[in-house]
Image (cartoon, rainbow, N blue to C red; front, top):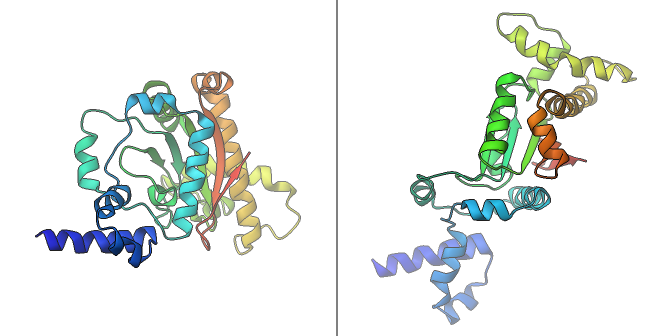
Length: 247
């Protein structure tokens, strides 16, 4: 059993930390130490959450995205994290993402259980229910950052450009339509067949949603004005996995 544990430790350390095999074998005592670094089990405490600033949280999201792009995600003991988070949760950020299955939010920022509140709706736009969820995440539960995360090739944005009015999809496309109107200054072909135009509308949708949050949630607006939280927009690039943050 011990030999099996050592072998597993070597594999995890060598592949996840890119540590030279020779250096590991020269100092076997480092195996468990490195394994604990790789197999992250800890979840955030209230004190650790309170010590964070919005700027530190944003930097952490950016660094996590670099690991995602480089395929060096943190190996996590999810079973341990589930058990360790039973008594409470103290996430760092609220992410409003699109429903799109190609945007794995926790992986995109290399975060584990208890790190993020994630709200998902096709087209990543805000409504009263989303605002209430954000207020809970920040005002009640202490998250420091709200990120509105759009992405390239968004089907909901395309449906809004085409003004699809079918069933409950209509309420979704109507929620994104302000971004289409904001993109009226686009000089090229205004068609879903034109990817640059779709991307332009997607960016407008992110920026409009950020503005919508500030205008329609006095609680979050006041928290941001006081420096307690930061509300920002970002765009996920499908081809590279890169997240571009908007100031």
